[in-house]
Image (tube, rainbow over all chains, first blue to last red; front, side, top):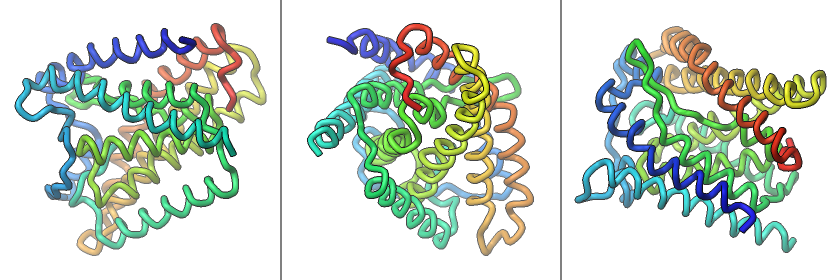
Length: 93
Length: 206
C-alpha cells in the first residue's frame, strides 16, 4: 500500500503517545495557556455530558496508558475513515 | 487550546457556531475542496500528533495543532476540512473541547489557524523557493497561525457580560504565551514540510 509507511508511523506515534499524554502530563501537571487565562478570570469548567464513548482519551475500565493508546488508534482510524469516505465522494463529483 | 464547556458566554457560543457553520458552508459550496487519500493520512497523523502533549519548563505544556501544516500540504480549503474533522472527532468521541464550544474551537483551529498559517506560508514561499522556503514558510506560518488562534481564543473567553473587560486580561495571556509556544509549532511545521519537500515534493499542494 502506498501510504503504508505513513500509517505505520501514525500507529507508532499512538503507541508512544501515553508517554507524553499520560505519564509526563501527570508528572508535570498538564497546564496550557488557556487554563492560565481561565483561572485569571475565574472561569469555571462545566461538565456537560454528551455521551462521548472515550472521554478524555480513556477507555472506561482500562488503565490510562492502555486507554490512551486505544483511543489514539480508534481516533486516527475514525478520522482516516471519514476523510477517506469524503475522498471517494469528492472524486465522484 | 480546546475550550471546554462553561468558558464561553452563550451568546459567543452561538455566534462562533454560526460563523464556523457559515464558513464551512461557503467552503463546501464555493471552493469544493477535493479530499485526497493523502489528506486522509494527514488527518489521522494530525489527530495522533495532537495527543502528544509536550510539557515545558515553567509548568506549561503544548501540543501541535497543525492548521498551518494542513494548509501548506493541502491548500486552505481542504486544510480547513481536515482540521474541522479532527476537532469534531476530538469533541464528539473524546470529550476534548466542549460541545457548546465546538463552534469556537473550529473557528480558532480549523479556520483562523489554517487561513493565517496559509497566508504567511504562501508569502514566504513566493519569495523563497526550495526546501529552505518550505522550512521558513512552515516555521513562520505555524507560528503566526498559533498566535492568531490563541488571540482569537483569548477574545472569545474574555468577552462575556460578567467580564466586560475580560479580553484585556485574556488576550495578553493567550497572545503572549502562544507567541512563545508557537515557536515549537513553527519548528515542527517547518521540519515536516522540509522533510516532505525533500522526499516527496509532489504531496505539497498548498
